[in-house]
Length: 162
Image (cartoon, rainbow, N blue to C red; front, side, top):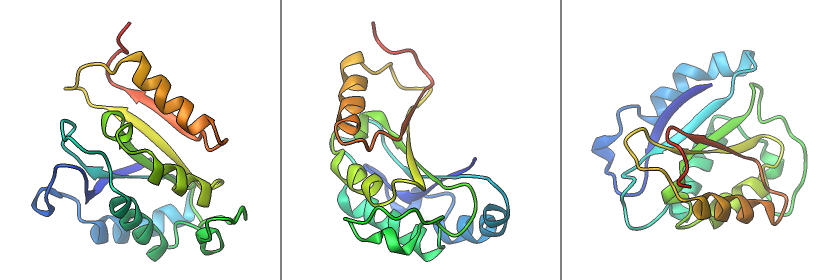
């Protein structure tokens, strides 16, 4: 994976972005397009923020991915199920914080439905965060499993509460 938090997420400001999207995309596009490397794109976040990811934040990420042809254009239609290749490379992973995701999961479900073959979620907790509750993990899993958009990976740097 080539990973960077390239956009402003919940609880952060543009000044906190250390890897601007244009720079990351320009520096990685040739490598991504000629190798089977996935791009892992995320948002700079404050994990304690009261609200989750917004529709606008997910749309902005999708716009950047479209601009660099990381997603197939034909899948832009919400009802499409085409299997485009997204312009080469190994696909795209959206890295999302579990605590923020659970507060507003709908935009990610819509995203996964539009791009079912070229995208997935990596759901993470940070090393400085306390463990998430089992019921939170289950809620996330159940939400995405309900409509077969369950292309999520769990990546916890901490154990789950028992």
